[in-house]
Image (cartoon, rainbow, N blue to C red):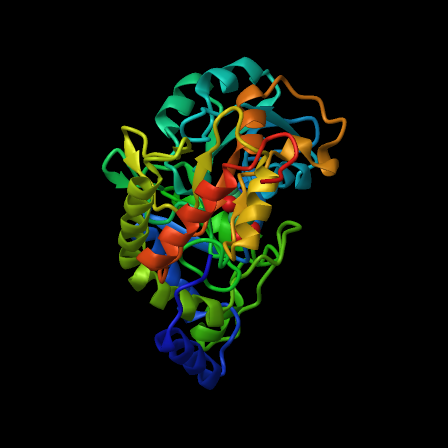
Length: 374
Ligand SMILES: *Cc1c(COP(=O)(O)O)cnc(C)c1O
């Protein structure tokens, strides 16, 4: 992955520096409006990362000790960790083999009277069938971890449209970046207002609003909250990046279409769009067939050929941080995490680069499974 950055971002950040107002202020407000509109949400609340955004969503819903939150283990570990920040218990559900997204049947199987929320991840930009997940959840709220999904589509609308609460990431590993940063989007005005207070120490009136009022405004602090603010430096960059997003997504889709053609002769299964949506291809992974070498050996062979691949999406329950954490069997998660690898995709990848990647992968698949030696 390589972020797409230009002189426009540098100039936008420089302008904020010259303005003298570098913390959360007018650019953050502008970025929130523009980003929320782009994903079809009424309100955007900028935060310091998707991880802190997920924490705020759970806190907002009152998740606390003794509560359970259903999450896929097949996700970046921040999804599960956000639940632990609330002293609640992450309950792992399994995913579908095609998309790597939550399997509604697996969610239904782990719901209990203590389930306070379900977190649906749009993994790697693959749109999750949120309607399918909601259908098994009854009154339990479904939060969307849309960290990777800015620019993905679900049933003809941007991912995030109609979401109860969705959290987004602007880390450089995603398409749209602000260095670090995140956003929570929602259609609920009261929730948005509370989220704004929660990210800023619980302040009744934000520092930026007090400054802009030109009067003496004494703020109060009704509850213990957090400092999860984004800076105007980041938001200025985000506004430029947002303008680039449609072009970035189109380019990703073009690159992935070419990967599919080049990979067709190989015995691998590339991740594909579901029938109900399109991915922004934040990550593009392939599943290796039975009898192929171990992923680690394939990655080592790619690295030796100068190609930077990565293991597939991690499984949180396999990490030491979750050792001994009880969970139902997660066969699809275990299969996908062991048998998938992520190929390079970024805006400036050339056709020659892609041919090199696929040639290196073809060679690596000829390694013998047992020893990893050619
Ligand atoms: C990247 C990612 C996160 C964390 O995002 P940050 O902005 O780095 O906190 C959370 N969930 C998923 C699925 C991710 O891919």
